[in-house]
Length: 403
Ligand SMILES: *Cc1c(COP(=O)(O)O)cnc(C)c1O
Image 1 (spheres, helix red, strand yellow):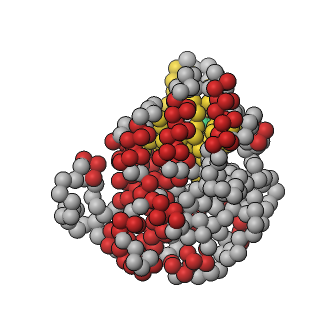
Image 2 (image 1 turned 45 degrees about the horizontal axis):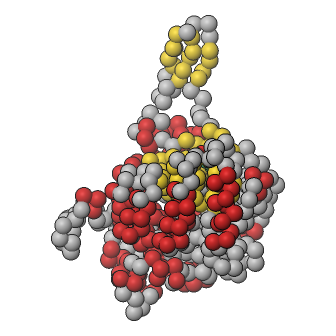
Image 3 (image 1 turned 180 degrees about the vertical axis):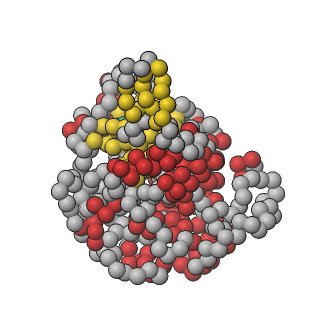
């Protein structure tokens, strides 16, 4: 496997004449390079042209849906891996692109665990629930979750191009027979949003909304834009990471018509920031779409200060502002993914003050039972005395702010 670090080589691209500002990134990042993709395509998708490979619809059509097939592509051992996924269990799906990224990384890379189902998923333990956030009881109509006073979640599809094994909505994604929610299903949701004038922020999520085509997506966005009280629209997606080919000039031009529109991108690990993903983020940012990141804290995958610090810093280089780190939701079979809250606090403590404030997201627990997102912070207030408040800084030095 070619994981050599070639970043010291010349970074001038010779194949493109005039690189745009956003493409003046070094072409080689994290030891990944284009030649690896070409070889991967030749080895696994004979007779596929690079044009086909770069077509997002080809990527979805040719996605790998059997863990067995992925294992044979990657030449992995089969220990602990579920080959026949039980019915009603979160299915397996990964884009050829994301498989090629895994292939470019070392064989024990933690990102494998995020998408390959293992037998650990079959062991439910106490406290785990299929709908841990109890979204069901905050759902006034199908596909809407209205929990906070001024904003609502609109679940427009149950489909994702790649399924994360720790998905908080694993009970609902991909369970429909037709891929996306139908227009009539959306209608009830639009009517609810129209009626509820207190809603000024709609988060379009799923599933992954960016797996829909431009026409379907524009239908949703234009319907929402026509509702006067909706001030901002957000889209929650992992597409720039698992299907960066989807971020086309046409998509970006369409999205920017609906501003203010924010994009929350699900990132897990710094090695996801391949040159393809960086290109996708830069295109979105160039179109003036504010980007934020959401990261789930995962045991053995990103639960250390160095990995998180690297991820958050690299996100800023593609103009994506770290927004949330989530404590992993207790879905059934998630014990092997969940780490302690102390670990999360240690990570926040290792970021704040040690790197740009912009690189420090909010660390939250989405409270089981539907309490919503609760922020947790290291304790910087040592004590409150008659003289003032005693604070500890990032270096654990004490300071007094007088009362
Ligand atoms: C996360 C979430 C939101 C948005 O929360 P913000 O803190 O505003 O990003 C809204 N509704 C539901 C149900 C959510 O889970």
